[in-house]
Length: 230
Image (cartoon, rainbow, N blue to C red):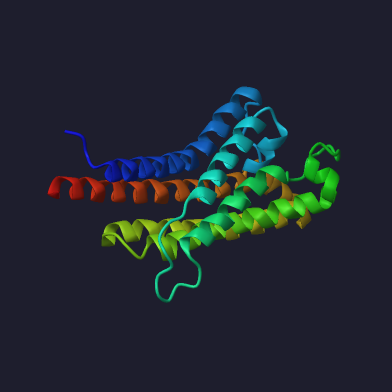
């Protein structure tokens, strides 16, 4: 006997949500593996992979993540909330795509993208970092406020833990990036040699992926329970 078509659509919707989480978890691993194959080392940041032959992986995953986030409507705005799911995911989705379109600084100061040609090299780099901040902190807001308002206490703890991780590594990554650009030679070398920004960005993306995988799994279980009851 075939199930309720509505439940089938809902199940497919949450499966896509889990795929979004899988993309978040998988992106740093894909870049790590491809980077080791090409150069035998970890680059200073995720964004630095844009300037290598791993560009397709970096840009493709960000476009996929961004497109899904923009298409995701989410729940209606709850009483007391200042921003709805839809607005928040639109901000995150647009920011993810913009990160891919506005590359970070490269050793060769050459115009290689449309955004660099349109806005200039410095403005493109500034846009990259601003959109990266918007992406990370909108994801943290989702974990703290929107995901954390429902679910069991254990799942809410997971969401809040993911939110805290995103905020913490976002702050450390920002400080490390400032030290890399404006700090002493010792600070610059420490940040580069230990790939501090890369690991901070990776942990932030992993936390985002885990939160979405957990949310998708939780709501898939709710759908199955409703089907069994019916």
